Image (cartoon, rainbow, N blue to C red; front, side, top):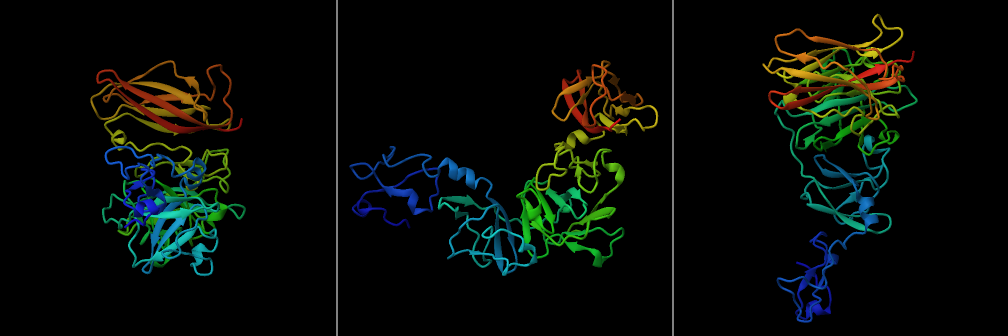
Length: 420
């Protein structure tokens, strides 16, 4: 029950919620009615001040400050992107001395815990260093699913040297939360049972839907908020990474030199997953820093399962990189296939730079039919003015148009131009 807010409230005046957008559980968001009659049923009360609960600066500070839940058999953990203050009657700050090995590099007051015997609160009142407060909504736990179609996927890998921090990034592609318990990782060519390392051995973290999370030995060396310390196996000079689900389904990524763009430095440039579907392609990150841990991949292709069907047109890259040392012809070559449906498609082909500018268009617009062989195309690495494009990554963009059914499908694939 709410405490009395003033002498007026004790004298029969009603209590009014000051800001409807503020928390109902906080007594500071309630006061006595401003009406002389003592109440304002069915009408706005003078004491109401919409959007007065938080200042803009406070909202900016607390934006994405709460990141993740986790639990053990004895505790529930709350991970924050910045140091915060919580009610110490309910929560306790986890210190580097108390915390397990994975927490030794974390910032003070960025990890809090409560007893697992206490119910998970709907929201947590957090305070910043300036004393400003905000109620942060918690995220409900959901158990690991036994559905083989639900799970984490390897999303990015950096197998670096001693000058950078190696990491493995996973992403949960389903619209629920998934715990990291019973997920394992290995870099052995043919891992035996003893070669598997728990992805998160100390805490069962619940990965939010569609969020990428990086796992590294020292996550503070990564430029991201979404990173968890983990005793992952060494990635240096390894040729493959395996991720094993609780149902013992294994996803493998082969770390091959040909996956990297010709301009990339493998020890400084990560490999990113290009699609969310099974058997996805992997390519070098195009981010200026060389990797995107805990963030959307630099290619960031959306998942469109329906359009990945064999019924729809597709691109197959024959030679992905233009290089003066390439075998003849010196060109990026590709093929277009109509698909298995009886629909006839027209292809609009262009090359797009990293800034989104179309630098070259194929003047012909080939028609593709299911009963015809694949159409072969090539780009000689030059723009529409006949000048050789600058070295770097580009997108081969195909818009497949079917006038008969008034449908358009966009397909893209990364290509590269190596230094001449």
